[in-house]
Amino acid sequence: MKKIAFFGGTGGLGSKIIPFLDDTKYKIETIGSSKVDLFNEETIHNYFQTNNPDIIILFSNYNFNSFLHKYVNSFNELDKQIDINIKGILKCLSYSLDYMRKNNYGRIILASSITVEKNVIGTSLYAATKAFYENIVKTICLENASKNITANCIQLGYMDGGLTYTLPEEFINNKIKEIPSQRLGTPKEIANTLGYLIENNYINGTTVKLTGGL
Image 1: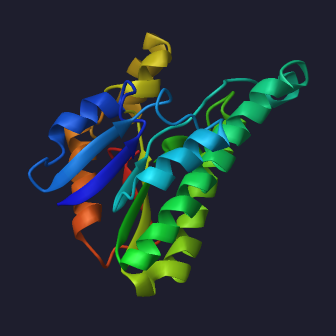
Image 2 (image 1 turned 180 degrees about the vertical axis):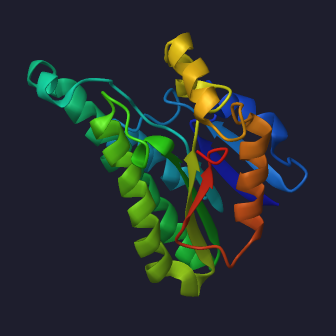
Image 3 (image 1 turned 90 degrees about the horizontal axis):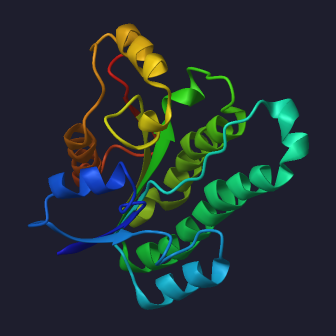
């Protein structure tokens, strides 16, 4: 049975996805910041020293909404987003790929965001970190496809859970009107997409848009 390490699986959206993953096929471990703090390299190192997941799903992230010019008053928040969303994720990727290459199998799935293409005021740095994911999976593919390893992103639109519900209700209602599907995406649809990417060896280095057509 393949082992999944679901980083962010204890969060608002991640916890809703877990019940829809096929636990008859995969041994699923949910990982929150209490187990692996992406801000703390030692906890990342310790986790991968004692665990060898075949599949890593990276939904962990940190967001701080701010106009870019206002970061002069909160550079600590800028640093935190980079330390978690970029450096922390890269360390997880590096540790996991070391094992996956030796095992000649691996699946990597990162959560991107609709904000990469549909800009939202105040999300400049958050969106930039997600664009980084959409780019880096292409390089991971080139470097590791020969080892039966795939790396892909899911670009999440406005979903029923997670960061969507940190937004004002009026904003959400207006966005739903813009979505061709006229609704929020569901955790089950995310889980179905994760399962598809895990099982399909020929989808590699790309971003699947789960946005309802937005």
